[in-house]
Length: 118
Image (cartoon, rainbow, N blue to C red; front, side):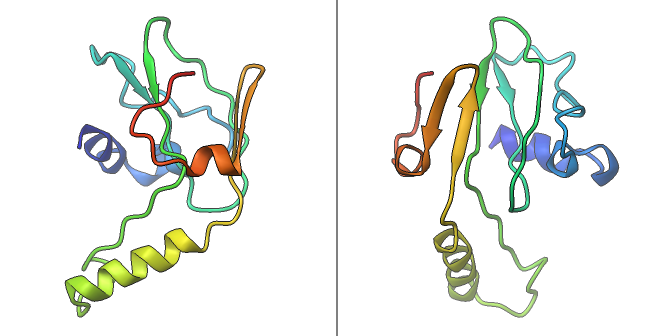
């Protein structure tokens, strides 16, 4: 997935994942011809970020994501990794997204739609 290539290709000090303000949201996307603009998830907790998105770009917003691999747990089996990722996902009990004047609350963001139109 192109999103993951973008996300893991950015050094930690510049990575939007570690940016609490949104100041670094465009890192690695400034000269992109992609029709998508990626917004980074966080590592848990509350984030309030402000980000300028280029006109004409669609947004990809990973509201609730987890990655768990043998890098974090080298001795785990595939089944162990699936269980760890599932436990992490199931621990989420609050989600909220606001873009401009439009708001999405927890039940809206739990829907399994692949694409949502804002």
